[in-house]
Image 1 (tube, rainbow, N blue to C red):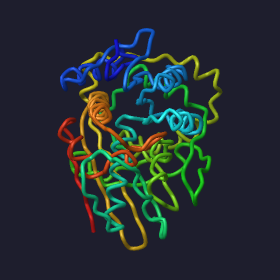
Image 2 (image 1 turned 90 degrees about the vertical axis):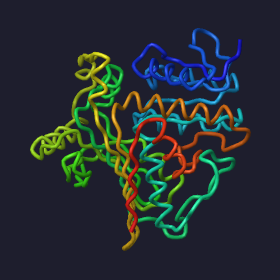
Image 3 (image 1 turned 180 degrees about the vertical axis):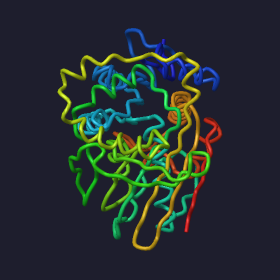
Length: 345
C-alpha cells in the first residue's frame, strides 16, 4: 500500500518525533520495513543508514529528505546524487534539520535585503530562483550556531566521533578549500538571553555547501559556540584544531551516551546569519529550543510542502532553492516555536 511519507529510522530520537509531528499534522505516513512505495522518503538515520536509502528512494520515484547534517555526508550526497535525482525528476534535501535549513534560509533572507530583492508568493517555489549577487558577490557570509545546555543524542555523538580526525571545507573565492576545524575565531553578539557576545570557532557546517548555491560570495564559513565561558571557548578552539591529528582507530573506541528523553528540551539555540558587502550588512537571528523537536517540525513542514507541490525545482537542492526565505521562516516559526529577528541596516 502506498503512502505520502515513509520514515526510515523511526525508532530513533529524531524519527519518533518526526512520526509524532506527521501524525499531529494529519500527514499520511508509514514506517519503513522492506519496500519503499511513497511520495517522500525521510531518512532519520542520516549517514548511519548508508547509501541504500537514497538509492531505493530515487529508484522508487520518491523525493528524499535526509536529516544528516555532517558536512562530509552532505558533500557526498551533492557530489553523487544530483544527476540521479534529476533523471528521476525528484527533489533531494540534504541536512533537512536545524543545522542547515534555518541557517541557509536566514542567510538567504539577509542577502536578499542587501540586494534589494523582495519576493512575493508562497513559501514553496514552483521554479528555481536566480542566484543572488552574481554581478557583485558578497564579501562574506557567516552562519554561527550558538548553544546553551547542548544535549546530543547517541546518534549525533557517533556522527561527531566519526568526523574526528578529518578536515572540513569552507567556501573561498568560488571554490571549496580544505581547512582544519577551529582554525578561525569570531565574536558574535547573540543577545542578552545567550549572554551577549560569544566567542565562536569555525567548524565544518552544511551551510558552507548550500549557501553558495544561491548566493554569490567571496567567502562562506560556519561557526559554533557551546559555552559562555571565554576560557572554555579558547580551550574548545585548540581542541578543535587538534582533532585532525587524532587517529581514526582512537575515535572508534569512543562510546556514545544516550541521554534520557526529557533531557533534550534543555537545549537552547540561536542561529546568527550575517552577510556583508562593502559598507552594507544585514543579519537574521533564529532562536529556539530542543534541536531534535525543532528538526522534526522542520521535516514535517517540508513533507507537507512537497506532498502538495505540483511542480518545482528538482535534483539536490538547498533550502533557499526550494523555499522563499522570509515566508518559509515565518511558517517554521509558527510550527516549531521559533523567534525570528531580522536586523537590516
